[in-house]
Amino acid sequence: MFIGHKNQIDQTSTVIDVVDEFKIGSRYAYKLLEELESGRFIIKKAKVLKHGIYYSNYIITETAKSELREILKIITSIL
Image (cartoon, rainbow, N blue to C red; front, side, top):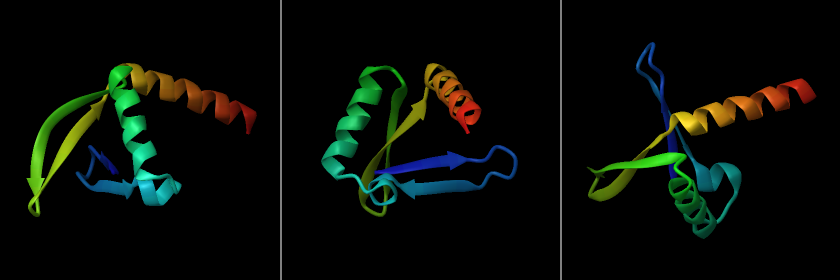
């Protein structure tokens, strides 16, 4: 399971493997994905075929972005 971010300025992409980066099991990662989708924090987009494997693309919603900003404010104020 991968998370990617595309920089709007220079069009570069950053991609991390969530399972490896955060040391979580793939079953938990997919459960988290299901919860994010059902909570309308992410929206499933079209599937993409790369190297013979289909990948599902998701986009993060504005609701999730605003909640993440609030969490960042709290963490920043604590630190």
